[in-house]
Length: 202
Image (spheres, rainbow, N blue to C red):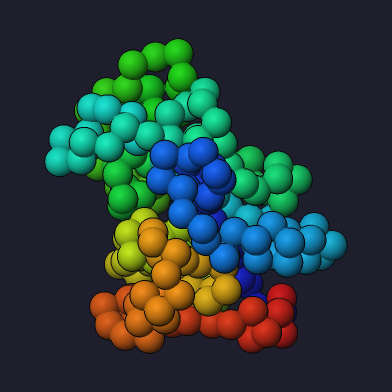
């Protein structure tokens, strides 16, 4: 059986639930909650998770959202299918972190890149590239954070795939999603796999 690891990116209520600052209707959220989660639970498959703390200050981006301690920060994934060691980022790319990230009681510092810490998280949570057959990405969004994560993983030598039914664009527009999944630049960094194809491997 191949060593396949799954990473969920930014599946947080700020983007996925009504009332969230960046909420749009995303079909992938229902698919993840009603199809993937029961399957993972039944087959004892654990998912790694990357989430965001988008509080200010964030030079170059004036957004202030996914604030720790607030509803929008919460993940849509139930705890029983998640690996405990969650990576928290503060920009689109996962290598960006900062002091007090994820801490609702302390003021966050300025974003900075910490490639060493992200490498340590990957090695301990996912495994080194030579020991992993495929990394499957799910979550939000393929025109932003999922895309940036795919790039970063490919730079590090991982074989990256995007689960078609489990991702979406920021807008939630099906035509936009299909265009992105069918063309470069995304296809330069990751292959697209369907749920039927993935099930046969798991």
